[in-house]
Image (cartoon, rainbow, N blue to C red; front, side, top):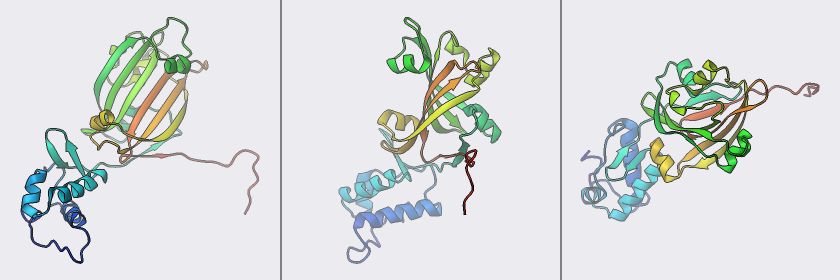
Length: 255
């Protein structure tokens, strides 16, 4: 650690701005394993003393590495090397649950529950679920984790006619729906880019403003009735979404 933050080797003349030199030095230490995931960095004032650089220069280097996802800052705790996240590819052509997706990959699944409650619906939930006057909704909000890494925040809404008691959902929502004969058979999903706000970023263990994927899903029963309205936020550094495309019927092939 002392060698990484040694005052030796900083060149004001030909190696670029001092903050970039410190940024490269820390990034090289992470890449080589001298700084491992979970390792904590000295406080900014200590790094400034060790390197002989100003605190403004040190802060600029650290913030650039935080924005790049190599470091993470925890309020009241300090600055840490960010754990590497395995990228997962998710097919958009399959209607599966998070639990089923992870089980297919042989990974563990954990839910950190934020809310399981029955409440009055928002106007958005009324429209999406086709609720009548006076109907209430079951809301499920949780952080979905795999192998101890937070990957997504899932906020699901269902009519209480479908799910009268949301506390019965412990792991897979779709398993509960299937047991009651109301598992969805098709869905419409909309995906958009999002920059994570402070609360969501903290829940996912990434910097505020980090790139994420916002997915809204409306799922249907065989009868055509809407059964589920879910809004999810996925870590942008952990997921790739893939879809198979085929030639439209009746379209002539051209060369």
